[in-house]
Length: 136
Image 1 (cartoon, rainbow, N blue to C red):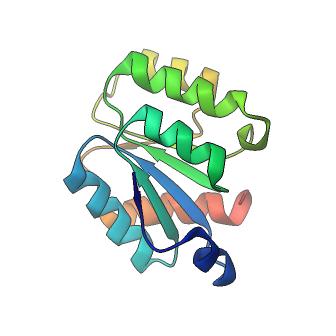
Image 2: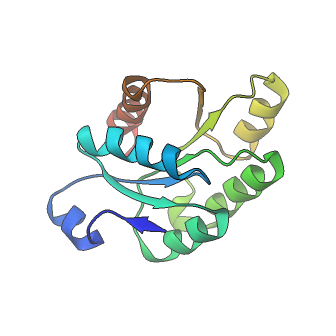
């Protein structure tokens, strides 16, 4: 799990906190840099388990998940949604899988949006900002 500063520091600065979940260190860094540059506080996790642990101790306003295994990602979405304080938290899925069936199933259990890979940092920030204005 990687934290950028302390959680209290982010709260004092009034920044919205985004949890990034991805097994790839390079992807977590790319996402983190783009979001930090846009003014978001970033917490990242390399696994579903670390991400769930983070949810238990940190106030998160949005989750961005790049977990590639379908079953693992579905389980993670269910775990997030099972926590009362995260039932309405936006969950954005990063995916290279364009199959409509998968996205329909993920949306049905609680995914809020999808970003198709490859994407630019600007596209990522635009999606996060859309949710910032409407829900967090």
